[in-house]
Amino acid sequence: MNRKLINWMGLLGVGALISYMTAAYFCRAAFPGYNWMEQAVSDLSAESAPSRQLWDKLSAVYSAGSVVCTTCVAIFVSEKKISSKIFRVGIYLLVIMSWISKIGYQMFPLDDAGKAIGGVDETMHMIVTAFVVVLSIASFVTLIIAGIKRKEVRGIGIWAAIFFAMLLMGPIGMASFPPEYFGIGERFSIYAAVGFEAVLGLYLFNGFKGVASL
Image (cartoon, rainbow, N blue to C red; front, side, top):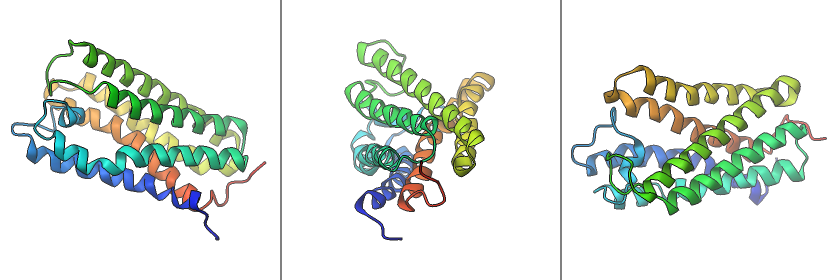
């Protein structure tokens, strides 16, 4: 296919996933005493975290690429009128979530890594997280419904169902297992959104081939 610039932007979704995974893995060594099984990934990027500087460098592609990729996906499906209206709404919800995540976490980073939530920034950080989770759930559910109703987007609906299951495994795991395994459950939820954005990025790269337009 003759790919345009907007199609190439889809690769940023894959780059964002790789960037995030790289930062989450290598920043642990820059944070003495950090226990990935117990602590959240966000502790690595907290204001007081010794790994903060390394996190900013390694997650740079994720920070920008995630928002650019999802926005380009939304623009593409909107202009091409890909599939049904409910499918496009699911994509738009994902974009809104991505922007709230980008702006909200940058405005209200955690102050102290691994410490109790107490200050204004920490409280707002948790509010942003609540919006991100709710919008992620709404997007996944909407895309699953679209996949059930429309054959041409069934593949995306299946991917949405897989990552939605991952998203749910996060809070279920955090509630079911001891606190020392909090970090494992939290990672399921985080990688659900980032992973799905990478999948959509690949769809965009291929021009949503096989997905019919109205």
